[in-house]
Length: 319
Picture (cartoon, rainbow, N blue to C red):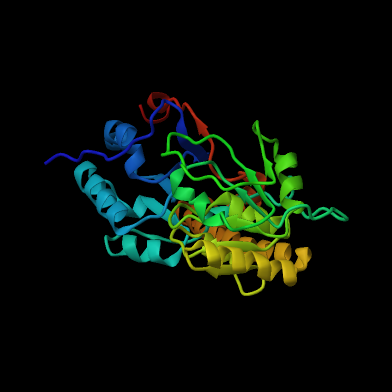
């Protein structure tokens, strides 16, 4: 039976970019596999042997995702050696390795540019016990914060997900989208940051808290945000309102040093970036490209958040 995708990118603009272009090697960066079915099924037969794809994981890559990817690769006769998965956590690697896919844990949040907005702010007053930066989508489970006092809520567009029905009372709730600098200020005004979903991707907001130097209260989760957590910068609590509120109180009573939190995140970011550069260097070497330094190329072409959606001219690229 022909493969039928469960979901594809809903508009002509989707995450795709040409990362490196050379007569002996082209490298592309895409998000997920199954969401790219429409263009993959059209152009897969036109891929060159020297076309290579980095695939980052925009959502938890479960066993089901692995089975879908396996069906796509089998139906389109795609070479697994030309695709490298950037997993956000070890369980994703286990799920996909069992289907013959290659890749490593190179968490997407290592592409957050630490030189941009999200940083600790000196001398700022802590106005909120906790902040939850996240769109009002059902899977974000805002209701678990109902017993948190003096809460700040910063929400963006919902992107078509089921809307959360139970939004807790808040001391601050934005009535319009905030600029990154405004979000940074609200994070810095808070004693800790909340992330309460049970499953999603690596979650940029979680790492933005850490880059701003505030600790995280998180529920147990799948998707990769937890690789950034340790005993100092986070509390991973049970999925109930009392546990979330108690964790917030722990950080109120025992505040953390913002620079220790931020520097810990930066150290792990560098670790993942070095792993990516090593893969890139091996690609250059295997394709006879000896005059380009992989580390320099990475830094010269650094992509904040890695994800950029636009309308690629695929016919021009693969035609």
